[in-house]
Image (cartoon, rainbow, N blue to C red; front, side, top):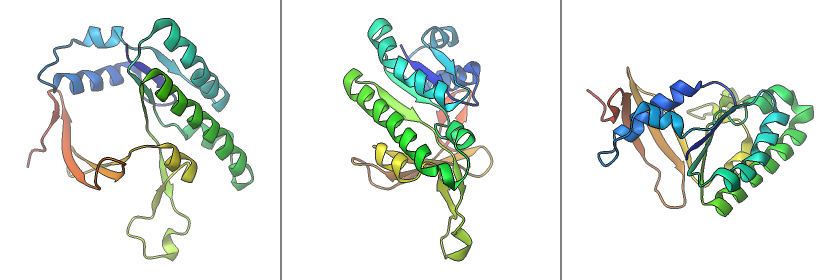
Length: 191
């Protein structure tokens, strides 16, 4: 089984298409669209309470229906940004986010499941004051950074190209790779 906990934007079929493209790009795997859909469990969360509740229910689901191999949370901080507005609620937001990330880390270790989450970036208010080449910073701050084992930055390249940069990893050096997502899967970029 694969498990997808959609916290915000991507519909099931978009995810299934991406998974199909990824699995079909691996020569040892032959999988169909329907097979991918049959191995997904999806939950769309509407606020942070719902997101936290879903994360807490995941462990029970893994015990009952497992084994699962992957948990994906799309845009992990987006609901936190909506429900905890302004600097006055920043401390509470970070504490709640930290608790959820701790639960996900324990789940990953207990059930031997990979946890992948996407995040958002925002303009750094201090970015104009310094000589930083990229004034964007990830939402979630140090709490999210310290809870992550490997951090990747994905950005748009030229045309249909995408760039993946290893920001931090205990096993991989900092590096970049350019690729394209096509109907045939992940491909080398066309020049």
